[in-house]
Length: 122
Image (spheres, helix red, strand yellow):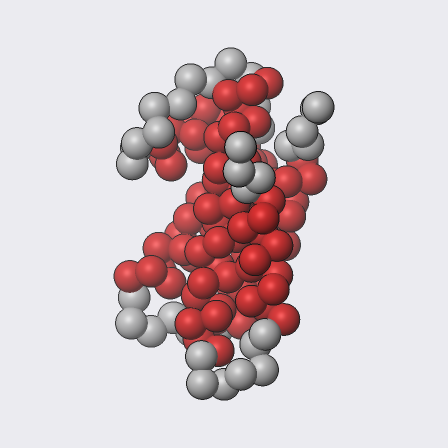
């Protein structure tokens, strides 16, 4: 089984490589995307394993998991996932994203918060 925290580690690795100006923007965008997907999949699996959530593993899952955490009185997870998703969408679809380095740093912090708030119980 894949450990979704590896995506967060990949995001941190890309963050450290930021000095290469030729591909710096691609590295920032990639780090933001991986931070989101790592946190999202971890939150989905946590809800499945410990909170009774039944995932559908489709494109609607992103909104469904945020809504589920709100029903569980865990809005702090839902809000952070939504912020990460918005940043990831901007990086994946917009030609220009201002403040990428700052967003990357914040995305990694938000993803770490989600991982730390939803620890594996095994």
